[in-house]
Picture 1 (cartoon, rainbow, N blue to C red):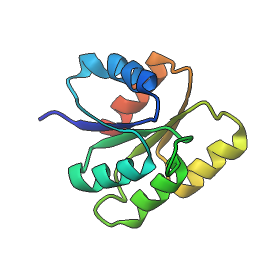
Picture 2: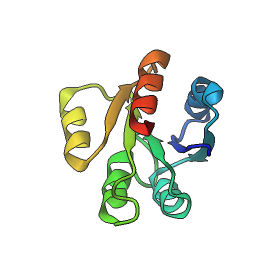
Picture 3: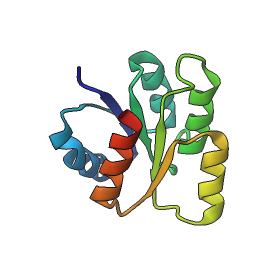
Length: 121
């Protein structure tokens, strides 16, 4: 059965890039354009993994992660933050809230695929 991955980013270009990287992995790829949609789609689709940007309109990635971690049925879904924010404070905050991995943009294809495979294993 195909693993479901929810890609969350307000940039169509970023979503396209991630989809291109994951295309060969026979995953079912879903998308959301902000944190609010991410929370709704995570609860509705129960993906096996979420790849989430931090800086988005309506609700940012960290707030969305907080909401996902609050609900019993979504609290254990792995979430990888995929973001341009590389300073240690942002990384620490994301892990404190409960992210499962952290990948910086521009995305290194090898690093992203390794994290995805590791968390879906």
